[in-house]
View (spheres, rainbow, N blue to C red):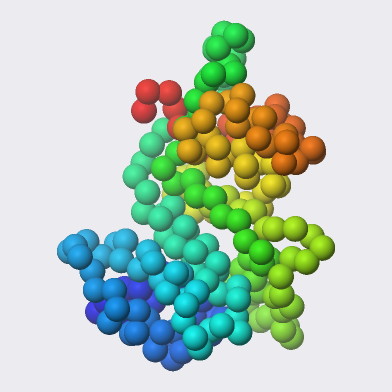
Length: 212
């Protein structure tokens, strides 16, 4: 059913609110958002936006972002295969060409920014026997949480990244060149290290190979 198709994409959200509560919310979502195509793989993409306006969860301000995280995970899992840029590929680019170089991200890469500690919420939900309750208020005093969801091989993964790396990767994902992405990242985060960020993401397979 449509309800089951949506619920299947949000297992951590189910753990946070319970199966009965989630089923009730999804049923209301389905009534207001019937699919307009036969492929249901991507049905439920707007469920997080629905939760943001859903009165019964207004006391759980982190829930829409958790749903956004789970949907990013779903999209990373279903993304088409593409080849990663080999780590040595940038060494073959003339130095004067590097600043204007676009570095598109692979199709599975998704970036998420939140006022809530989503990484800690994920760890809590995944624990076999979670002890006590988790303080999941906002990130007051610590800034936002920045996450990268990607699929280096067969399974999607999540990485917590710095604000600078988030801005850098988001700029590249939006089609900006290397120099502009680095400038924006450095302006926002004085600890941003371009060389280390490039090396780390080349090793992770974040970037798509040229001409793919």
